[in-house]
Length: 140
Image (cartoon, rainbow, N blue to C red; front, side):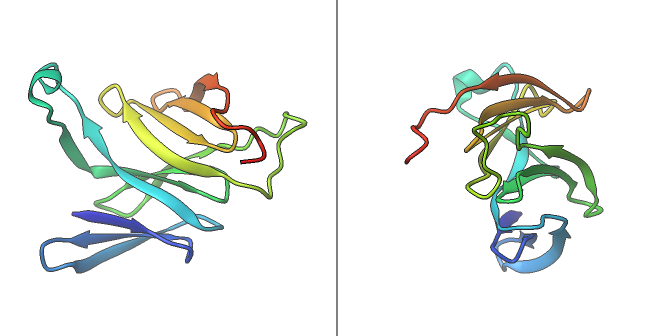
């Protein structure tokens, strides 16, 4: 399976190798910059270099400052996290958003990074559990 994302505000799911279109995930209100399947790690992965892909769960993020969790089998948006820190006086909703995502801890947590720094979400409690600052100056 392959996930693609686009400026048309959707994520598309394709089956390979024939690239047959399977479904669209709709819910973002601006350009979608990243979409990834969940990866389930095991204790042996550090030695073998492998990750098992959990293709029934995916995450996406983009210029609408949301991180969305998708059930790939039903196409349902099962969770939405607000990435924009409205309390920050330096935050500007018009410039940036989510640029990358990484599932952590057997897909129970998710790291999102972009213009607001790095935020780690616990998907079991639907809460941000950690915030890390930006790696880049604001003028980059």
